[in-house]
Image (cartoon, rainbow, N blue to C red; front, side):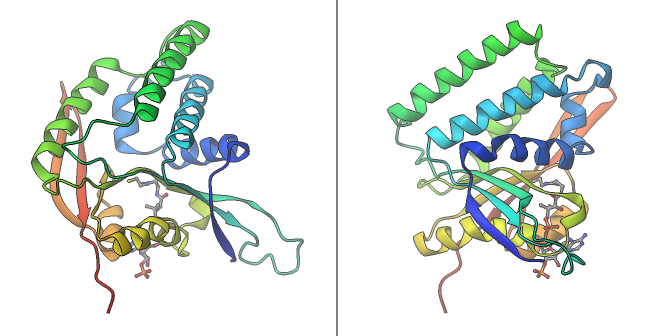
Length: 236
Ligand SMILES: CC(C)(COP(=O)(O)OP(=O)(O)OC[C@H]1O[C@@H](n2cnc3c(N)ncnc32)[C@H](O)[C@@H]1OP(=O)(O)O)[C@@H](O)C(=O)NCCC(=O)NCCS
């Protein structure tokens, strides 16, 4: 299978959103934070995710898509060109520096867009807001503990590969689009995953190490997030 990694464009957003929605349908954190399945609104979720992608593009976040230009067993067919995976990172933000005006303005714009979606879709589309804020608080406390590098971290916000294209090197290519840049700059990278198996092994192969676990607990319903850091590799 031939795969090309390219920066995300506005035109790619609908396909990138669909890729993430499908890849995360069985994700433990997603199921914990959208726990009332009957209340889940796919359109509201897609609108929110598209707004987040627009936010990321406006903030010049490193966001990449992998395009499969041919698929396994497709040699006899016309080449296809579809999104095989998406990877979205936040650039490093030094702890001592305030966020830029662009990021500040985009934060407000995103909040405003979410407010409009709440009105248009009659709510948050099934998001358990209490659980969301519990996670946010625990995440902030964890970052304060494990983000010891004052220069900040490349932070993997989302990584998803279409299920039929997993295990073929697409995830590695998407991650390396940023880790190679991080290595050149001598910067560390960080991610969180709620799927221990097989993701811990996959990320270890990509140079990440487990540094902390975040337990999100609500009644009898819990979810664990595995926090991993990759230190920059020096050129040989
Ligand atoms: C996690 C995910 C992005 C990995 O993408 P992928 O395209 O399958 O990964 P790759 O094929 O590039 O594999 C990367 C490495 O992990 C290894 N690997 C892949 N799947 C594996 C598995 N199930 N068990 C053990 N190792 C595995 C590969 O061999 C490769 O190592 P190598 O290059 O040293 O041989 C993909 O499985 C996915 O989208 N999962 C669902 C969504 C998700 O959990 N996203 C992550 C949220 S943080």
